[in-house]
Amino acid sequence: MSNYSIQQVSEQFKALGNPHRLALFQRLATCCVPGTVCNASDANSFSVGALGEGLNIAPSTLSHHLKELHRAGLIMMRRRGKSVECWIEPAVLEAMSSFFTAPNSLEN
Amino acid sequence: MSNYSIQQVSEQFKALGNPHRLALFQRLATCCVPGTVCNASDANSFSVGALGEGLNIAPSTLSHHLKELHRAGLIMMRRRGKSVECWIEPAVLEAMSSFFTAPNSLEN
DNA sequence: TCTATAGTTCGAAACATGTCGAACTATAGT
DNA sequence: ACTATAGTTCGACATGTTTCGAACTATAGA
Image (tube, rainbow over all chains, first blue to last red; front, side, top):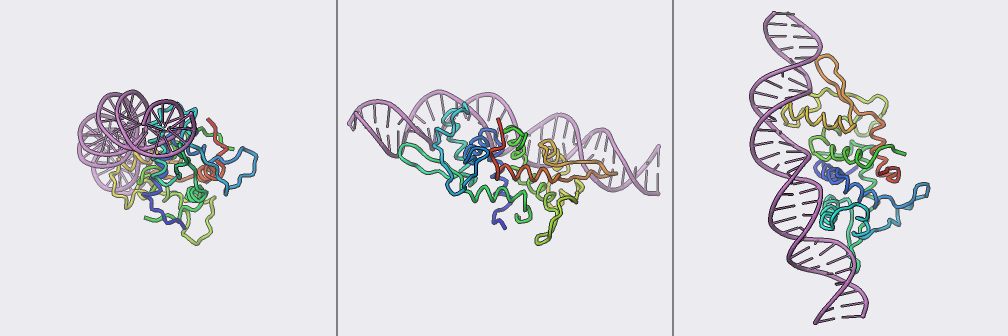
């Protein structure tokens, strides 16, 4: 049973509804190579810069998108020295996935 | 393994990233009352009008939102007499859910 | 303290979205 | 044919979003 509202969940989907942000999120969500057993507990983190690699967007745009993902509650961010590391809490992936497998549990 | 691109999937999330559309989708996805065993094969359908009930939006707005959900490939629509019935294919729920449980399977 | 690296904030421009009412199409029943 | 019901399309308007460059803050190392 989720304690999120329709409003909150729609904000999360909106955050994923942009190709750049979805690519960033997927990069964080993909914690192991295909065919490998994925251990959810050691979620690996990326620095902001590393996340943006290959996306061809300005640093300011990258920063903006990560802020959106963070505000939606989809990713975590913490400063570590010169860089800021980002990661996804496994519970977030479970909650998002369960919207489709158990949509009853959402209220309002 | 999904055969959708980042572009396509982000369109699907974008479609769900609006409170009204998410409410419509959830109403269709909720095929059984909480605590009941849900049989995915007999997905129940709603007419356009029934779906919009309680949402306080103009018929034209409702129509627009359902078209968006349909264009994103999230819902099916078919005319049945005077009304148009909408439903979700169970495979869509599985595909969406698997983005969060197996994000590796998405390319481009 | 100076410099280089890593991100963020701000303001502006172009573009997309959500919403409505009015006018339209489609079907069923009389 | 006429009427009522069910949705859709169109045009308009207000509001949001995406993106950038320029200027800023934060940290580490020399």
